[in-house]
Image (tube, rainbow, N blue to C red; front, side, top):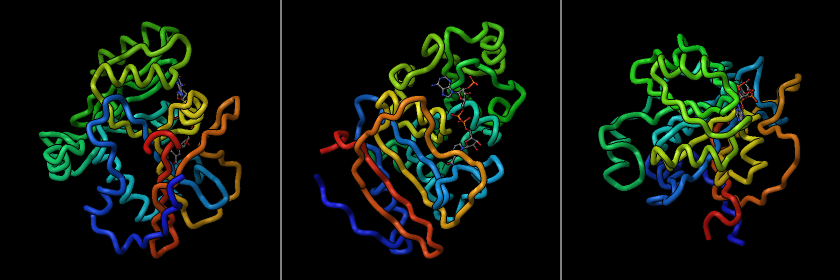
Amino acid sequence: MPPVPNAIQLTDLTRDDLVELYAYPVEPSAPYLRVNFVTSIDGAVTVDGRSGGLGTPADKKIFALLRDLADVVLVGAGTVRAEKYGAAHTDSELRKRLHAEGLGGDPDGTPPRIAVVSARAALDPASKLFTDEGARPIILTTAAASDDNKKRLIDAGAEVIVAGENLCTAQSIRAGLESLRLRRVLCEGGPSLFGELIADRGVDDLCLTVSPQLVGGSAGRIAVSPLALPTPMVPRHLLLDTDGTILTRWERAHTRG
Ligand SMILES: NC(=O)c1ccc[n+]([C@@H]2O[C@H](COP(=O)([O-])OP(=O)(O)OC[C@H]3O[C@@H](n4cnc5c(N)ncnc54)[C@H](OP(=O)(O)O)[C@@H]3O)[C@@H](O)[C@H]2O)c1
């Protein structure tokens, strides 16, 4: 078991330090699936139905950096609808540099694509996900979704991949992304998709922000699935910001030595 890392002050770190701390495995030979969430101290995943009320400057900084590092942003349809997802906007210079250094990014600085998991392919073709400049959404859906829904999304410019009969599993999602050679995967939730990934033992890495507030209310937690399946995780780092935000990174116990 590797030693538990000491806490580091975020203000002591440069952007290059952060790139190193959050780097994906070099040249991954298969999709590496990272999940990113923010929660309140008392475990709420939303305030008034959205995650925005939990965000802090440190969380926003890492949220953006994780997108800079990724080949693809994977997200459940519920989150796309609640958070009004559009195309990802990333740091084009950083993405070019990361690519030159073999750390991901993109040769032209192009942002990562958004891949939406939707059993029903029930997305609005007039939404920002399709109409934003540079949008090239991928829809991972099922054989059970109606042909009309799929056609509507293809007509709106999406690449539609059938990845499951009634539900997309972690394995079928990985296979769908691998068919496009998208291996640095950043899953931004939501709780139903994360629960499915845990149940399928499909999570390699979790970046979890604890926002320094209590929320109460009836908000759910970050993962929901019908069955509990404990998965041991190893802490990789623990960063503290001056406002009390705690940024953690956890890897699946057997993912790296
Ligand atoms: N705090 C945070 O960091 C954070 C992050 C993300 C989301 N959130 C919040 O979480 C809430 C949304 O929760 P949610 O659980 O509904 O989110 P979700 O997991 O994003 O969406 C659920 C929907 O995604 C599709 N889906 C999920 N897993 C699937 C699977 N294995 N196979 C096929 N389709 C699948 C289904 O879409 P269809 O119905 O289209 O078939 C399902 O209804 C929002 O309020 C959002 O703000 C918070």
